[in-house]
Amino acid sequence: ARTCLVTGAASGIGRAVARRLAARGDRVIGADIADIKNAGDTADAVIQADLATPEGRALLVEAAAELGGGRLDAVVACAGVGVFDPAAVRVNGFGAIATLAGLRPLLAAGRDPRAVAVASLAAVHETDPAIVAAVLADDEEAAVAASQAAVDRGEARLVYASAKRALVRWVRRAAVTDAWAGAGIPLNAIAPGIVRTPLSRPLLEDPELHALTDASVPMPLHGYADPAQIAPLIDHLTSPENTHVTGQVVFVDGGADAVLRGEEG
Ligand code: NAI
Image 1 (cartoon, rainbow, N blue to C red):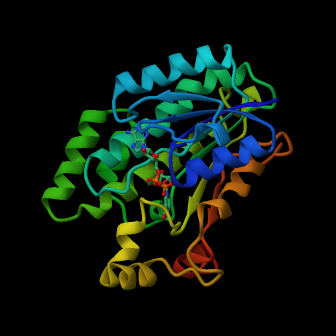
Image 2 (image 1 turned 180 degrees about the horizontal axis):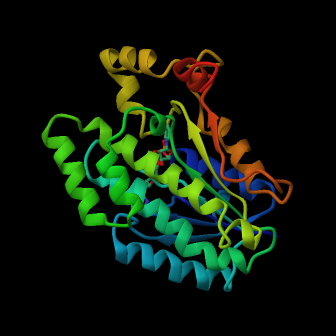
Image 3 (image 1 turned 90 degrees about the horizontal axis):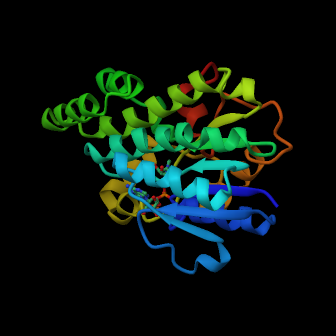
């Protein structure tokens, strides 16, 4: 069986992915800051780590090496927060990149290795170049300072989008290098629109925010998604069948990107 590691496996999309990969017969290692309840039907092994911190990221890599026996066949970097403050850059930017980069050597030792980052449609929205540049320069303190500056000038929404933009750019940059393509490891990002999870609940619970969300994330095909409708794409991208899709940002957004960026997007 393949051994796959999924971060954010305690909830939402990550949980649906863990369940889907377990159902296809994979051995799933779930990682999360939260307790992974009912791990039985989703994860065979659990790593509790805070990906907002360098210590938690190091712990993830260490524990994954041990639980995977020195190898992994797939990694899904899904853990993320929906907050509009510097935590978004720590978890969604640095945490996700550290997951992929840190676990890459284990993937290189795996069989038909594959990796996927869960980005967001937000990555193509307005972003703050200073935050994006600091993440790509691997300068966490500068990225946090730039995020705080955005919050202070009333542009907190840019923090989440910028962390996701940086993650997408990192994926496209890394995917075609010797370390990934050269080692036979497809690396892609997916960009969901709105998915009904605890993360998006505040947007959908409040009528005013719900209307704003409807307007800013138009999803003409089937509307807002459930996590189980996102998981099959990650299933495919992490399967041995995916031999040639790499460096892509695959939108799984009910058409939102096509609406917002138009036919030449
Ligand atoms: P969720 O809140 O249901 O799940 C996120 C998981 O990440 C939770 O289990 C949480 O404990 C974990 N996590 C948060 N901070 C962590 C940390 N510091 N260390 C380790 N684990 C941590 O949210 P959802 O919606 O399933 O989100 C999953 C990913 O999908 C996130 O990266 C999010 O940005 C992304 N996404 C979600 C969308 C949505 O509408 N729900 C839309 C586009 C992207």
